[in-house]
Every structure is written in C-alpha cells, then in structure tokens.
Length: 303
Image 1 (cartoon, one colour):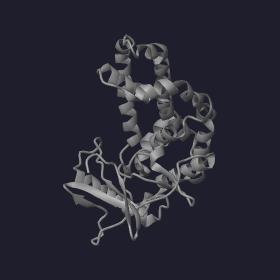
Image 2: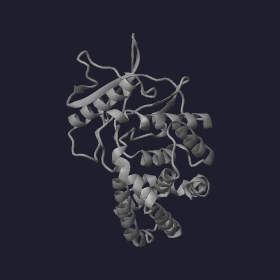
Image 3: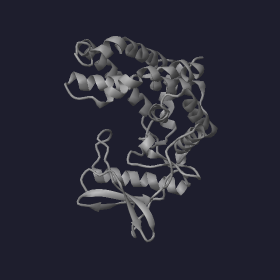
Image 4: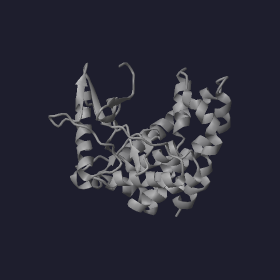
C-alpha cells in the first residue's frame, strides 16, 4: 500500500478506517512491534476508562488491536463522520477533550520520567544551534533577509521562555511531574480533529504515550488555533473546565508557546542546504503569530 496514511473501508457492517501504524523515530529504542504493543495497552486503558473522544477500535477474535500485513502493523477503527473545527465552541470542546485525556488513567499508569524537563533540554540545544547558525543563514541570498529582520526577536522570545523556565515555581512543576503520570495524544493537529454532532473526536493515535501535558497543550494551541486570541482563550477555557491550571502551570505553557520552534527548524534545514517547506509558512504568518504574546500569554502568564 506504499506510503498511504489511511483509507476508508466500506462494508455491509458499516464504514471503517484502516491505518498502517507509523512508528516513532524518536524516544525509547523500541521495535515497531514493541511500539504497537505499548500503544495497544494505552488504547485498552482509554477504552476501559470510557474516554469519549476516541473512535471505537476494532479487535481481532483473539482480542488484539492490530494485525500484521507484510511485516507492518495495521489497525482499524469505526469511521467518524464530521467536519473540521470551525467555531469558538469547537475550540472549547477540544480543550475539554484534551484535558480529559490528560486526566485519564492516572491511577493505572506507572511513575513517569520528567518529560517536560527533557523537552526543555532538547529545545535549549536547538536554540543554541540556531544562534550558532544565524550569522551564516543571514547571508543566504533567498532567505537571509527574513533572518536578518527577525532573528534577533527569535532570540528575545527564547530568552523570555528560558527566564520563565528558570523560575522556582515552574522548576518545581517539572520536578514533581514524575508523581503525576499522564497520557498525551502526541499529534493534535487540525487534520486529526473531527467535529461530530455529538462531540469532538481525535484520530491518528499512533503517537499516544506518556508525556508532558504542558508541552502538548502549548503545541495544540500552536497547531490548531491559527494564533487567534479568541480561539486560544476558548481552548484554554474548555481545558480548565476539566483540569484547572495554576498560575505556574500557565507560565510553563506560555514558555513553550512562545519558543520560535518553526524558525529553528527552518534554520537547520537552510543551514544544511535542504529545502524548508516550513519557512514559507513561517514567513507568511510570523507577524500574526506574535499577537498572542501580548494577549493571552501576558494576561495569564505574569505574576
């Protein structure tokens, strides 16, 4: 089936989604079979808990959540009809769905690593690399102008985030994370959100794992809200209806939100002579991206 991501299967028993499992290329060094087995155990936990935003997963006669074809795992779920996210109400419902996931299965999960701290450490390395590459990238004939104009602000945004992450209250959250195990979806993007008349559904669960709920919340804001302050506020409002955030937790999310990750990613590709599709999006949306820093982030991130 080549590189097909997923397809719809229509039968006399209904319509289903069939998807080849996409293994994680980062994280623990697990085989594909080990990854799909771990994923299946988390899906089982979500089903047992009654998590309402997960499409129904079909199982084999032996109770397995996946089958192997030509050495590759495949899984099948019910097909969910619906639309894309469209309104502030949709964003509020998405926030509730995300918080419900982050609150789920806590009693049945083992203690976890300090995932937020590890993510911070990774981003610091990326920031350091960006600063080293910036002088060279600014000389690039086709893309250097953008980095000459905005590279300094990228550094300022990162510095602000690092100062937030050095605060005692945010450091304490990262230290205590091992006592609050949580599952994350791993890829909450617009294509993976289906607004059904009854409730929103999240699809494409290949990256389901234990991880940082704070980074996932910030990443979801970045990936889904189009940097619209009203959408951001609606999503956070819905999230907090299920899982309240302390001022320090809001600070932590704001620190991840403001990091210029797309600029770093673009810079790495440009510096290595590779094409950067992300850069074209970045250059078109940069000014719009800055609006929330003076809105939700300042309104809720300062003490």
